[in-house]
Length: 167
Figure: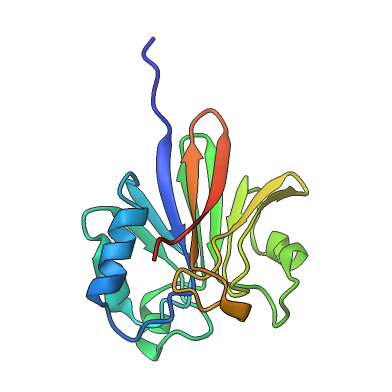
């Protein structure tokens, strides 16, 4: 029986751009070169940002800083199925920065929850669910933090890693 390679998913959030820029496109291509799927966890701000990923499967949700057009075009949350795993995609739950328990209430029976909003990268298990927050791709984090993103490998298991965006 042939071995099926894992599906490689690129995850970003909180790009906060008002338009697609050549710099963003170059960084996105470098970071997500090996990814066949892109998940954007909100606050892309403008829909044109997704054009950087036209040759890939792309899913996105709106965030609290998105334009009216984004709010109309993108859902608040989304459930995706890859191989034997269910993934929930959302920007935030509630108005606090400590809302992982509230995220669990947003999805029924998921293996992974991907979220944004806090600009703080997270990759850990909680209540049997893999939580991933890729941080802010545009280095808009507090105290000069670099931009970050996540890579999720979906095979027999879910494996995720956080990476810094190269400058």
